[in-house]
Structure formats: C-alpha cells, structure tokens
Amino acid sequence: MSLHIICCVKQVPDPETPASQFKVDEAAKKVIPAPGIAPVPSQFDTIGVEAALRVRDALGDVKITVLSMGPDSFRDAIKHCLAMGADEGVLVNDPSLYEADHWVTAQVLAAAIQKLAPYDLVITGRQAVDWDMGVVGPTLAELLGIPCITIVKSVRVEDGRVVADRVLLDGTETVEAPLPAVVTVSNELGEPRYPQLRQIMMAARKQVTVWTAADLGLDPAQLKNRVSLEALYVPQVKVETEIIDGETAEEKVEKLLQRLVEAKLI
Amino acid sequence: MVEGNGILVCGELTEEGQVAPMTFELLGAARRLAPEVGGEVTCVLLGSGLDGHAQEAIAHGADRVLLVDDPLLRDYQGDAFVPVVERIVRERGPALVLLGQTMVGRDLAPRLAARLGTAVTMDCIELAVQEGRIVATRPCYGGNAHARYAFVTSPAVATLRAKSQEPLERDDARQGQVERVEAGLDPAAVRTRILGREKQQAEGVRLEDARVVVSGGRGLGGPEGFQQLEELASLLGGAVGASRAVCDLGWYPVSHQVGLTGKVVTPELYIAVGISGASQHMAGISQVKNIVAINKDADANIFKAARWGIVGDWKEIVPLMIEKVKALKAAGKLRA
Image 1 (tube, rainbow over the protein chains, first blue to last red):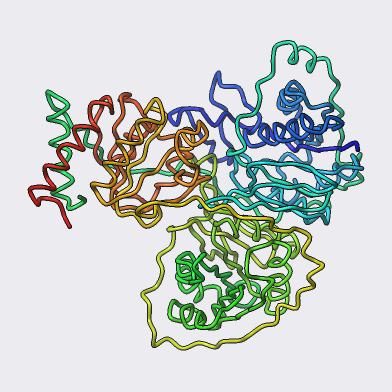
Image 2: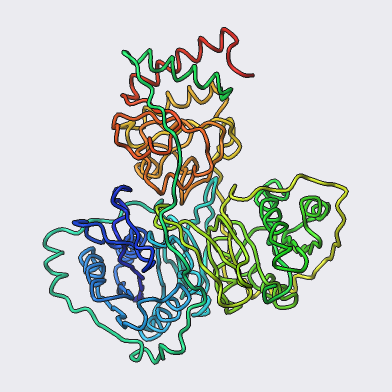
C-alpha cells in the first residue's frame, strides 16, 4: 500500500542565537535577524520529517511532501527537508499572507493539503520555535475533519492506522487513530538525520512548486486574522547577581552555603 | 464590558482524581478578571466520578460548577472532550474560556477554538481587559521576547502557564451553584483509541512540588554526573531536574525535563549545574527567585538570572557542596 505523508515546515530565526544578539524592532513588532546567523528550519518540523522518513524506512512505499508557507527564503527550509530525504516540496508564497496569524496559516495550509490529496498522514512539529504557539497542527486536524494525536515521540503506520506514543508529564500514552490523521511531534522522538553533501546537491536541483492564495481557491481579503499583535518586546529581567569569589573552590562553596543558610533556603 | 457573558474555566483532575492545582490558579485569574469581563466565573469539570469536586472549585473562586460525569471522559481524549466543551460554550456564551497549558490544554484549546471559529493564545502569563478587548501576554521565541495580542473574535480562548497565576486562598464558606450536565457523547465520534500507558516511576520528591531543585545540563559532560546531583538533592530534601539537551542525549529521563517543552517548576531554590541558560530552559524557571548557577563559562546566560553564581568546574564544586552540606546537616545548621 502506498502512503502519502505531508510534513509542514517553517523557517525561523536560529533559536541558538545568543540572547545578547536577540533584538526586537518594537515599532515593526518583528525580530531583527542577528547579523551573520542564517535562519533555520524549525527543529520540531525537521523532527516531523524524521518521523516520516522512519515510516518510509519501515514500510518502503511512502511519498513525503514538504509543505511550507512564507516568503521565497523559506525554500531553504524546504530544500533542507528534501535533502533529508523528502520527495517533493511545495511553498505557498503570497505577500498578502505574510502577516498571517495561526488561524489564517492553518486555513491556507489546509487548502494546500486538500490540493495535495490524496494523503494519509499530516505531520507538524509540536510548535514552531519562533512563536511557540503550538496551534497550527491541531487546527489543521479540525479544518480537515480528521483525527489528531498531539505531542508524540514515535509514529508508526500499520493496517491503515497510525499508532503514536504521546509524551505525558510522567510517562507515555500509546494512541491509535484511523488514517488520514494529523500527528504533531516532540523532541523526544530523537534527532533529525543530517543530510549528506550528495543529498544536499541532489535536493538543490529539485523543483519546489510555488502556489499563491488564488491557486488554492482562496481570497486573501476573506482571510482575516483573529488576533492582532499589539506589542513585541524583550522582557526586562532585573536580578542582582553575586558571583561568589574566593581563593579556592572550597572557600567559594563555603561562602555560597553560608548565603543559602542565612537566607533560610537550605 | 466585553462581548460575551462571564468566564468559563476548564478544570482538570490529577491522576489521583483530585482537582488539579492548575485549576485553582485558573480560578484565581478568572476571579481577578471577572469584574472587568462581567458575569460569573463558571468552572466545568469533565471526568468520571466527580462527586465532591464541585465544592473544591467553589472554595477556590467558582460561582458555578458544571459537572460532566461520564465513563467516556475518564481519560482525556480530544475527540470526547472537545465536543462537550464546545457545546457548553455555545450554550452559555462566555466571553473568555481559560485552560491550563498542560497536556490537556495543549490539545483541547486549539481544537476547541477551531471548532468555535475563534482565536486562541497559548501559554499566556497575563490576561487583561483593555478598551473592551481581552488582551493576552505570552512569552515567545523561547522566552526571549514577550508578545501581546488582542482578540478580534469572541469568545477568547487562552491557556495559562502553570504557576503564572496566584490561586485564591481556599474559602469553604464561599457559595456557588452546582449543575450536572449530560455529556451527550456519541461513542462513535471518538476516533482515537488509547492502547496503553506507561508511567515512569518517580522516586522521592516530585519535581513540581520540590522546595529545592538541583538541575544538570550539558556541562556535566555525561550521565554519570547526575548521581552526584541526586545525592545533593536528596541531602537538601529536593528533586533533580535536567535541561532538554541532556534529556535529548538520553543522560536523564525526560520526565525530569525543565523548560518550555518540559515542566515549569517553582522551588524556593534552584541550583543549575552545567546549564548554559538557553531561553527555552529559562522558560521553565521564570518564577524562581533564588537561582544558584554553577558553570565554567563566566559568560553563560544563566548567570544573568542567578542570585548567586560560582564560576568553576562542577566536578570540583559539587563534591565539596555534598561534603559541606553533610557537615552542616550533622551540626544541625540546616532547616528541618
């Protein structure tokens, strides 16, 4: 049985950017890209592609389509996933959608997924590492009218069902759902594979299909955000730090413990 | 006054079947917002065997409790919970629906909002009413930034971060209405099936309840270092935490992960050993007032949030701490 898995990916500012270089343009309500640090595919999304590749490793006949929405630069994220081993890439690029909130994003991705039908499984990251919202995956399931298993650490497909282990606070829960379904993956699934140079070169030659809102039968004027971003800022943390000094490690430890005892913390 | 009538709090039960502390925090937030939002604070509890829980919610601030008691609601499953809460929201028309940023809230809130055709903001730390609109503040970019959103549609659906809101003092004299509501569930609508559960046996003090947490990061260099952190934690009557990096590396169980995608902890004292202080880790300890940082790198971000810091090698510092804490303990100098 041939399977079609669609993985949604997003490109984000590198979350490893040192906090000192993280800057916000408060007037534009946007993050200022740190100089010299290239954006990366959101890590939970590449873990989603890893999950899809593991299903293909197990079953063989699996087509993996990578779907993204954003400006032309998002091709880099798609290319990365193609180099990991995905088969096809689709980018929805429409300037009228650049300010989309999670609701509009889900509407557009759902329309694109329907255009890519038939499909068996949609995989997203548990949240994008920029807005940390974690809403698009479950919203897609509702818009597509299919079941959803959120925040999982393993994905298997057997007998027309998906079986996934949900990450709970103190353990895991194994859940199954009939296909098609949406699954959102968490970091506990494991590291995404890193593409080899040969795969990167092959992916560079692959075509990425580009669609606009109109190609999806959508009228951007009808797609209205449901939240408005009022402010974006770097929170001020005020902590007076005492770096404990001392000639020896022993002296430092003694001083520290003295402080903790005085503050009745131990 | 905002569009809609009152606030609906989606309560949760712990595994032991008690009303979860998160629910009391939500009720505290709802009570403080109620004068500006207008209307009642209603708490809905879904589960199986809910007798006695209504009074708990009322004592913590609910004006009205809706009990939806049904065997199908014993364990959380989105397909069962979403339609029940959706129907209650449509019937009662609240202005605001509050949930916890828990494993339930993360699944239920976005799906509920999608079915209601409204918006949701996740993991909020502050809610307010400004010019007749509900406004939510939430950390993003792993905690590096905060974003403030205004809801355009009604009702507003929001999840709140654990420990971001103060619960009210319990007051058993508080009066409230209790209603039993039929789940009216069609079992066929539940498309998912839970095949099994595996619980990681937690030893000693629970991380979320611990007064002292000793946490380790990638700076430990390997899983072995955690034995010493366990010893130190145990001497201090605390629990051990870990950064996401070391859980991903398999050095320590995921159930101990502290941070944005792990647990939010609020001990009186947090000792961070070999933790650089990536913002997604800091998201799990943002309410902690007393952080001790032990790190070789004097420029590590963790020092910015720490009240006390020791720049040095943990391999030297931690054994000394264990030794000296033992001596203090023997001399009766530590608090009981």
